[in-house]
Length: 187
Image (tube, rainbow, N blue to C red; front, side, top):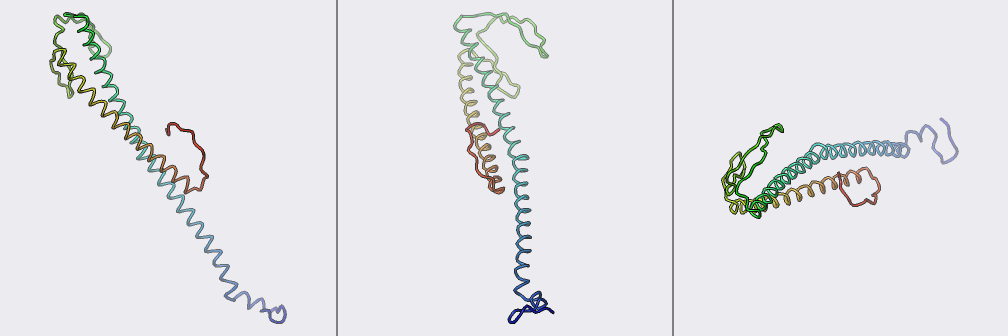
């Protein structure tokens, strides 16, 4: 046993004293606590990333695809309205045209009376309309399609906001400093 002098404990006694062991244990516990926090932080980041990749991004892709389908329907009805207005304006009573049979195969068709037309109303049903009836139906349908487009646009904006919020949460978890962003699309 070594003694350091009067009033100093020996090396052997100091090694086993509470004052010596407690700081060492706290440093070890602090190290394990920091490791546990890093592990927990990484686990949370991974769950958030999985949520974005497996839920939000596919929802966004689906919403955009559905809105694009509605845009396509809107274009079809807009073209039909323009064609009917053109027929009315030019007082066309009969018509010769090409009809697509499918797979880009066309045949000539003759329409002896253009005063009545068949309009696809959905689910494979076609209704015979006069020009004025068709125009009324088309305007109602275009209003409905416009409302659907607005709903999908709001849904898309909401999903993008959720993605941005989760990404911001990930940034905070990783303690990455905030960057100044340029306004624009998230994806």
